[in-house]
Amino acid sequence: MPGDANRGLRVYYVYEKMKKFGVKPRLFLYNRIMDALVKTNHLDLAMSVYDDFKDGLVEESMTFMILIKGLCKLGQMDEVFELLGRMRENLCKPDVFAYTAMVKILVAERNLDGCSNVWKEMQRDAVEPDVIAYSTFIAGLCKNNQVDKGYELFKEMKQKKYLIDRGIYGSLIKSFVANGKVGLACDLLKDLMDSGYRADLAIYNSIIEGLCNAKRIDRAYKLFQITVQEDLHPDFSTVRPIFVSYAELKKMDEICKLLKELKRLSYCVGDELSKFFTFMVEKDDRIMIALEVFE
Image (cartoon, rainbow, N blue to C red; front, side, top):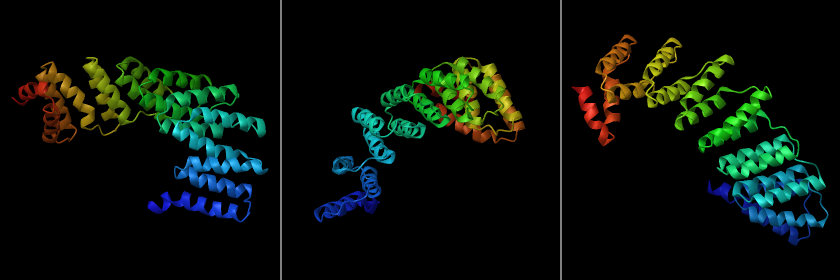
């Protein structure tokens, strides 16, 4: 909203008036002013306010973190580490909550190099990453095609006996499938279930697609049957890779078998076929395959 966007400037205007009349804010108010400026993308003004600390005020951890988070958002990592150094000298080393906040922002900004450097800094400070920091970084690595690094962090969590939630497994499985490593995805599925979790439909859908891409259609079909047994309500995304694989291999009998199974499960076969044909004709090289199935 426009009012929110201008809030930082309004706060800064009042601050300048206070300076003009010789009114010196307390530390709490300085923090509020800088926070308002950072949140409205006026980091340069926030840094100018911070310069006024030279008048004798002493920073607290919140002061440093307000500015550090703003610098992380803009990717100004040299300045981030400079402030972290000042924080250590004047106050204390950052705790796990401070580092986790930095990780969250850097991942959100897709600054994985910066995040890796912050992670190393955390290790140098002997600060143990928490589950949130691990989960956030792993998810960011997976989304940015760095699943191998994410998997190394996952193994660290296993060694430390951290409770790993299903979302981390899902991120790794999806990314492994996207990178053609369906074997590792299947290993993670087994590990997930051995850990006492129940895989959700999205995880099964990812692995089914990966198995079909690897021409392991029989295994994919078995996983489809498991989704039915587990009452996960498989959808078109579940059966589409199987349909496409059978069609490309001209296994029309298997397509008919799958359609009969869907009908037995009370699916509207006409709707599923319509979705299949719509998907197939989106690419020119699949139109003839779709016509063969139609015939």
